[in-house]
Length: 114
Length: 116
Image (cartoon, rainbow over all chains, first blue to last red; front, side):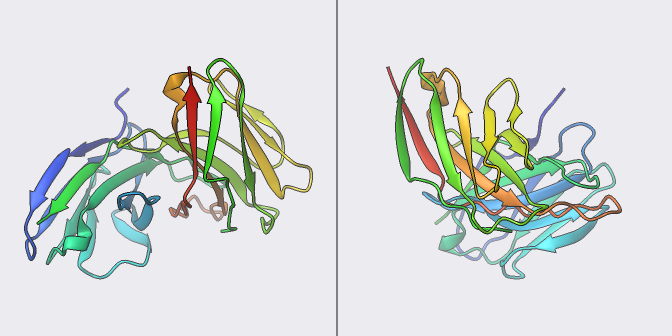
């Protein structure tokens, strides 16, 4: 049973460029959440996608956008990259259900903006 | 979601039990306690979660005090591979209807170092 997968594993971009990161959820999961983790910090919630819609959003600017596809996979897009966007970007998947659902994380994509 | 407080670092000898504390004094009655860990440069790994009863799985045990204001994660026989940052997170339950609240709020966590 494949877990959460992310691509690419590493990426180098320059300021002002745009980037797209991809995530495939764990088999059977229908919800994808994205997090940004700066060096030495805990992950920070960006947004969550469920039924192809953004259901919840953290404190991130509109430069950060996403998409969820009918097969539940997801993309994170960041426009007009800043040096401060350099971070580990984490995708987590879960199965939406009443009460509690557990998020399972992928290995992350490390983005370096020069 | 309630705020959590964890010690910044802890040490443990290999083979001994590691007991990681977490304070969550403002927790609400329907909020769950989750534990994740993150080994260097990897994605966070789910360990365990609970509401008010003690929980145990193949990785760890979670002890929640009766007033639910604090909890302890227990790794019964720590190994060198348990060296990681451990995060305690308090999270509101999903509403009825099946949709979920996505947000996990991570703090700084506890750096656990297991020594030979």
